[in-house]
Image (cartoon, rainbow, N blue to C red; front, side, top):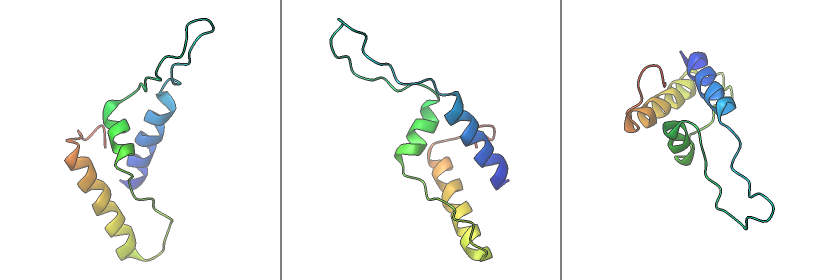
Length: 80
């Protein structure tokens, strides 16, 4: 389940178009992030990283924190 979640997150990150860059002679325009708004909000929440520890309780704790964050964002099963 963890691998599937990471694959979805990586796929969503890869599908995000680059930020809008100002064109010459148009002045400076604010950069507008695009892509999945839930993924952007998830990234803003500074999710914990999993360092591949071999201790099962650490992995379970990490997974619990990730699922809790996704619940806070009202993620669907597909978005998880």
